[in-house]
Amino acid sequence: MSALLIKNIKQLVQVREERNSPVLGKEMAELPSIDNAWILVKHGIIEDYGSMDSCPEDPKAVIDATGKLILPAWCDSHTHLVFADTREEEFVGRIKGLTYEEIAATGGGILNSAKKLADTSEEELIVSATERLNEIMHLGTGAVEIKSGYGLSVDGELKMLRVIKHLKQSHPLTIRATFLGAHAIPAEYKKNREEYIRQIIEEMLPVIADEKLADYIDVFCETNYYTPEETSRILEAGKKHGLKPKIHVNQFTSIGGIQVGVENQAISVDHLEVMTEQDKKDLAASNVIPTVLPSCSFFLGIPYAPARELIEANLPLCLATDYNPGSTPSGNIPFVLSLACLKMKLLPEEAINAVTVNGAFAMELQHELGSITKGKKANLIITKPINSINNIPYSFGSNLVETVIINGYVQEA
Ligand code: NIG
Ligand code: FE
Image (cartoon, rainbow, N blue to C red; front, side):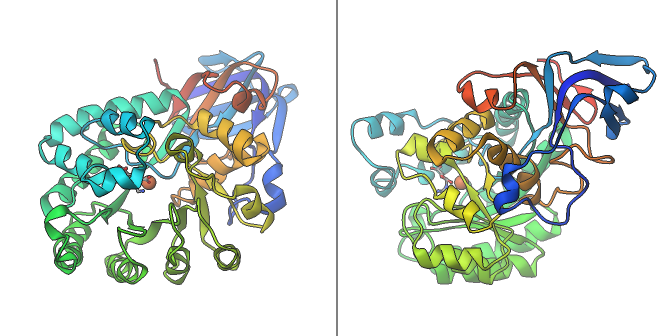
């Protein structure tokens, strides 16, 4: 199919000229749209669009979108969706009163996933991750970042990154890869963490750079995980190999992670559930994208990040899922939108900007994705017939995404 016309669109949402910066502050409440519109896709790219009074002649393929909205597909900039198995036993443990930190302290948590991944082949990981990618695609996701971090050994981390590289080539979604070797300290290096950090810097990074296995570097900068000083060293080593930082900070405690991200010109600092006034000031004075993950707060019962305050500080807030087996076993962006509106008091327009334009910026995909713009990839959502965009976060738990188009092709369910 080289040309596809979609016509009678009730509303074409997030129509913008290409931007050099993410949408920030007050601007986040604006979602430029065209009512009663058409869009023409050619060779997988958005060729043109307009209102129905200027609709071009029908090419061979036409979709009638009467009553339906079209949006750019979601850009989910933070996931760990390559993993070997679920961690349901920890879920039950938390219901009975254990905290995420208590579970981790007894060998559960990330180390539990690492143990399971060590016994799982690349082929098996590809099969399960492909199922997850297909699931999120049908919820409207068109681009996704995937982290390593359940290998926690030279072989394990490289295995995960090779799986992600395979997915990049085999799956229609646009995928970005992040190296998160510093996700936890492996049990065998508890008394010798320097040796594991040496392996990250001297053994993993050169191979990753050589085989082009990652786009970004991440560290879990947190009490009982990596200190700000260790984080800084690992990020600097990553940067020498061409990997820009996108890091986990301030999930449970504020220990200086935001400052390390700012100093190292991170693309984004992610989580931010626990922030001091100084953290907010330092972030507001930077160009780093704050990425918040409300479905992680929902699942763990931890505080929601102060998303409203970040918008009010004129920052370009980004929302993502954090899809992973421990803290967020869900890659459901429509649910993230509901939580962002209900728990963080974002307007639907703000939440949608945060998972489209700003999500694309948080993966440096702003030239190809994140808005309805001529020349961008035709990764599009066609909704069911609905009254307005407000219905998407309002109808929590429902999937109002009827059809997903990726690279110009309708993705059959
Ligand atoms: O982003 N906090 C660090 N990493 C993940 C959780 C990983 C896990 O529990 O497996 C997160 O929440
Ligand atoms: Fe995460």
